[in-house]
Length: 104
Image (cartoon, rainbow, N blue to C red):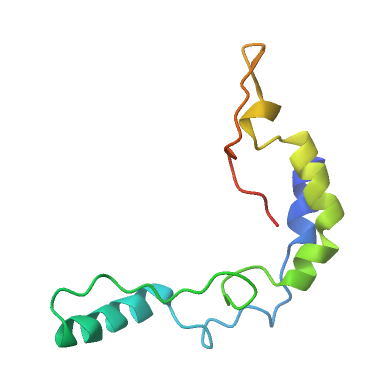
């Protein structure tokens, strides 16, 4: 439990970090873009506007992730996230697919 508590404490965002009034809702943005695209081309596919990586305003800021790296590693050691690290009924299952994505 202490490992999880330490991870949560390390990943806490500063009060001024997540400004919901400044972050556009990705679902609403995607809906609006899809609506515009389909007005021009009725066969247009769904539009997705959320960006991945450092530019994503909904992701944990990179500097906070870097500061928490030691606690993230401790959490991943304590709670394995890959099938080959998790023993199921004493049998280790070897696979190259990740069970859960890493936090960083």
